[in-house]
Image 1 (spheres, rainbow, N blue to C red):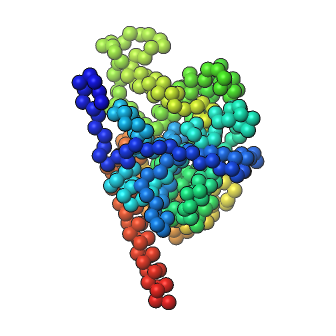
Image 2: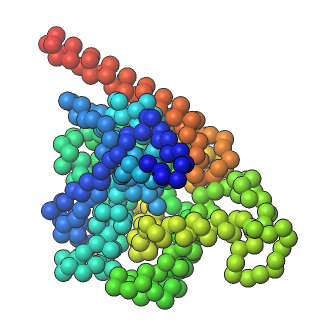
Image 3: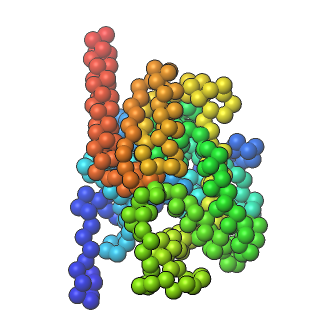
Length: 400
C-alpha cells in the first residue's frame, strides 16, 4: 500500500488478476523454412480461464511484433504495475471471456520474452546472437503446435490476433485446417507489401548503424539501444494515422512557449513522444529479436508458391471474421477485403467489417468497446453454433 497518502490505483474488477508466465521446453527438432533446424526450443506462454472437459473451448491469441505472451493480468500486486498488452480484451465478461473460454498466448520463436530467440543460450551455452537462424510466420506457427499438443488440445475453437498475430492465425488455418474452427483476423494483410518491407528495412538499418550492434554479438557488452530506439520510433509512426497524430500533438511545442531553435533536444511534443516510445521499448526488447521478427513479417505472403490467393487458401476450412480499419495505412482495408473476397470465392464462411476509426493501425487495440461488441459478439454466436452442432451430433449418436 502507498505510504505517502496517495490512494492506491484501482484495478479492473474484471481483470484475470495475478498471472504467471510458464515455459514449455520442447525437446524435439523444429525444422525451419530457411533450411536450418532448432534441435530443441522453449516457448513462454500464459493461460487464462479453464479448459473444459471436452477441451473444446481453447482460444490461441497470437501477438504482434512488439508483443509477448503477457496479454492480460499482472505479475505482482504492485498497484503501479502495467497490465498485459490487451488486458482490456481478456477477462471475465470481456471480448475474450474467460468465464467461457480457455485463453492461451505464447511468445513467438525469435522473441525475447522467454521463447527461444537470439538472446537465448545456444547448445554451447552462449547466446545465439548472430548465429540465430531467420524464422518465418510459418515457423512460429509450427512451434505453437507443439505447445498446443503439450496442453492436450486437438482443435482450437479460435485463433485470433491483430497485425502479425492475424498473420499467424491465417497461417494456422492453411497449414493446420483440421485444428482451427474459427479465425479472427484483425488489422492485417495476407501479404506484406513493398511499403511494409521498406519501413522495416529502415528500422533494421538504424540498428545496423549502431556501433554497439557488433554484427549481432553484443550480449557481453552494451546493447545497441540507440539503433533499436530509432527503429521503434519509425515503426510507431506507422501504427498511428495522420489524424491521430494531429489530434494528439498538432504542432504544439514541448516545454516552450516559442520555438527555441535548437538541435538534439525536442522542440515539438511529437518529438518528445517518439523519443519516449523509443526509450521505453529498449527496456523490454532485444535488438536482434527486432531484426528477426521484422524479417519474418517481410517474408509473409500466404499466396507464395500458388497461382493466386484463392488457391493458397483452398486448404482453410475455418470460419473467418476479418476486420479492417479505415485509417490503417500500414495494413489497408483493401488488403483485408482481398482476403475476404478470396475466401468468399471458395464458399467459406467469412464476415468482413470495415470500421471507420481515426487511430490508424492501433485501432484494434484502442477501440475497445467497439471491438468488444464486434469480436465478442461473433465469438458468442460461433460458440452457440458449436454447441448446437455438438448437441445434434450427440442426439444422432444416441438415436443410432
